[in-house]
Amino acid sequence: MKQILLFVFTFTLLSGCSDKPLTDPELDNLVGLLVGEFSNEQQAKDDSGYAHLNLVNVIIWQDRPGYWVYSELYDAKENNNIYGQRILKYERVDSTTFKNMSYKIPNAKYYQSGWKNKSIFDKLTIDSLEIRDGCDVYFKKNTSTIYSGKTNKKFCSSSITNVEYITANFVISREKISIWNRGYNNLGKQIWGKIKGPYKYQRISKKK
Image 1 (cartoon, helix red, strand yellow):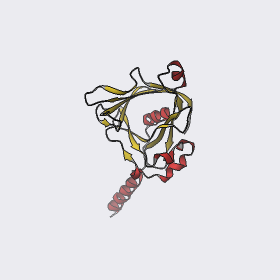
Image 2 (cartoon, one colour):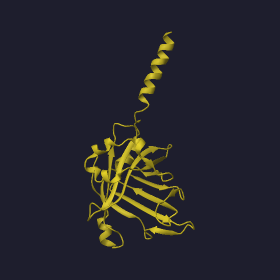
Image 3 (cartoon, helix red, strand yellow):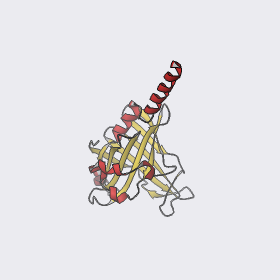
Image 4 (cartoon, one colour):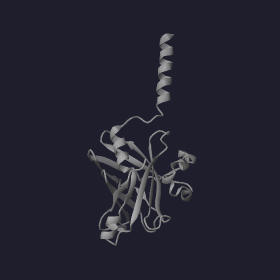
């Protein structure tokens, strides 16, 4: 009888703890490098072919399982001109690989500039988000402070006219994030995104 009670207690304890995020120093390090406010101001000054953009990543839902990040990309000169809003979930895939899963936000405009007041996201439920199938970004650790990531080619579909699929390449370091998004038609020819290279964002400030 004592053995049965011990088993029940142990099972209940493990079940109760399973919903809490496990400590993962490497994953925490990756997310920490991504969090903050970034700008490509210098790049835009050096090359007029690149718009001056700001990128903000903030951690949300710390009381929910996993690493959740709200990401917003906007025009540095016109803050109301939003280029992208996403909620991203980061997790470990295996001993050397991490990934983020990208989610569309319902009624996204309501959450515009939500990084200024993260409590606004408490109104959102995970079930209300729409995952972007095939758009997961897979990251590898290059050094203790540098990660590179990319999507699987031809899997991330697009709503952009004539664009069959999108690829994304990332390089994350302590003070910089580079992002190269490119769109291809059904013949595999790039017809959207920069030809020269990625947008290069320099850290402005740290936000959590």
